[in-house]
Length: 161
Length: 161
DNA sequence: ATGCTAAGTTCAAAATCAATACTTAGATTG
DNA sequence: CAATCTAAGTATTGATTTTGAACTTAGCAT
Image (cartoon, rainbow over all chains, first blue to last red; front, side, top):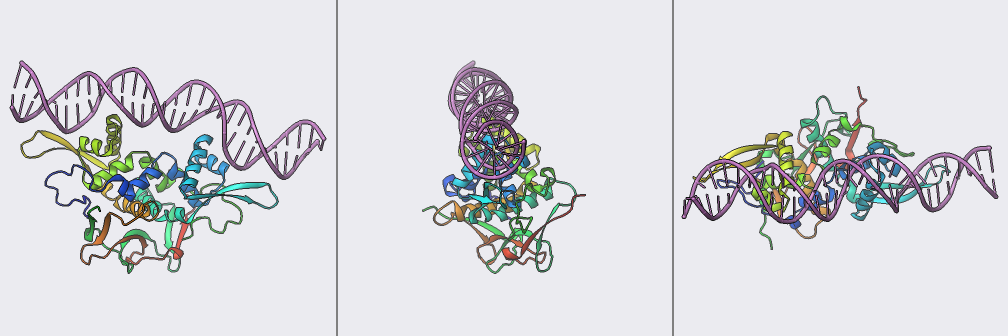
């Protein structure tokens, strides 16, 4: 994959060709880029949804968790809803919205990168095709669903209007 | 895609089924999860490599940039190397290593999510098949390179040894 | 010799985070 | 009915981190 978008680079790239405000990656990094947010989302992907469960599992200060959950609800990644288990009292759960669930591919990409480069030994999680059991990996695919090899991938920065 | 790994969930999941130390996603989130690191990596993907270019482009305090670059070099995502342009003086550039370049899929996944959910209007970047020009998107694929639909994707948490 | 620039380091002030204690509102117990 | 328990927070205070600005260093140019 041509990683430097600006191609040949006989002389160095002095600035990113896409403004930060105009780049989905930068805007997303802005929203998710802090010490806890990705870890909170990981928990919610695993199905952990209650304030105190998140707090205990992550060992995160209550104030910080409270602030991050508020931000994620405001951003529309999580929805806070009352719920009742059996005849216990009403509690609140933070569930991924469709927008939050759509981050799954990103988190799986991150997970697979982490497994490849940051951890040793076999991964404790397998992502598989439910029908065949085949292991699945993240890739770039055509609209027809065919993976394209890294060296055939090209970035094109469109002229900004 | 079954987002709650622990499936059926008539009663709530109280803790993540994979310890943080044992999860590539959590380890990676630990490394990349702060206000600047993802943005710095974005710049390096675009080919911006010099300290002062990064500083100016990101508007990041020098001390922070220095610390983050050190951490990324230590982690093996960036390599610092002297370089000389023309007969100018020797400078330093921070280039992605193979390990860093391998984060491309993750960053593209993040970018495409950001474009879908955080920005309006057309994306300023297209990811395309060099041979056919077709637009490419992130997906989970079988070892044969065939994309699998979200509802056919299954997470399996292996028993920890 | 003087100045200029890239690539940092240093330091004080401001912002953020962490730890602990406190609050609130239902449900449960005595 | 009063006291207690717990989930889900808020408040407060000290520690840490970040920011902004000035300073440093080394190589090259004038």
